[in-house]
Image (cartoon, rainbow, N blue to C red; front, side, top):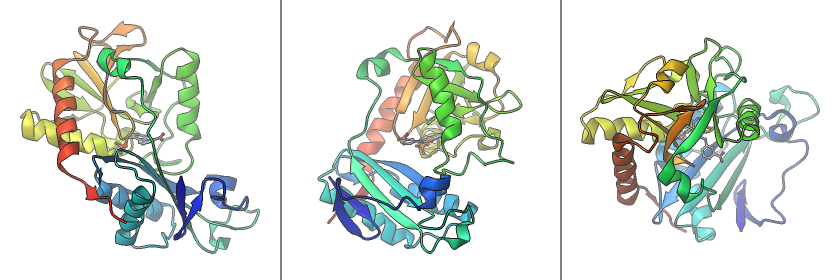
Length: 291
Ligand code: PXG
């Protein structure tokens, strides 16, 4: 594997960053998880744009232009012969001293890893997920806005631990008001009476790129206007269908939540249509992988 760090490629063994990088010392940095399908990078511009927004929010100056970054992502895929895979793009605050002042760090570092994606097993896509709501709430936006895709993922990691220890693969996170925010690495949607609902980003969710794609596909192909509205656990329990969206998971049904069977207990019709539409779109568009 060849890993991109600040303009150069390194072998996996030699791809190293300093122990004084504030990305490590303080989780100070931002990232993106991006997918390639059939030799093209899906929604690359949107990912780069969100990365720049996250960086701006934490006053991190990305040391490359958006276009140069897009080309670097493409080159890293090419170098690794990745046609279908996963790209992790990380911008760390860079090397500083042992104090949290980010302004002592000279220059941000850009790291790009292109490899294989770990998926939920295929059987889970056919059957659907079992979810629980967890005690750890999503960080309020007044503390650390969940819209920032930062290297500070402990909030999500704690929720993931709670889910896995309870024997389910993913957690539903609530906000401090008790409304549904999102899952640890996915956005959440419900279907009820033919309507599709999802929490607004302001409830404490990342503005997911897959989420946005699903909203567009539902509008254009199913004639359904997705409603962004506050959702409670009651709404989860009484939904006809539930599904999660994310770059890693793509679209996956949830069929049980806190022990309540969702709808028929199998992936629903609207979920399945969206999965087919999403798959089709990933075949049609993307930023080409080039040397
Ligand atoms: N919420 C959170 C908290 C996320 O981290 C999503 C929603 C979905 O957003 P996108 O833009 O992907 O539709 C995410 C995305 C990983 C990994 O390696 C995590 C994400 C994406 C890809 C890989 O854990 N999180």
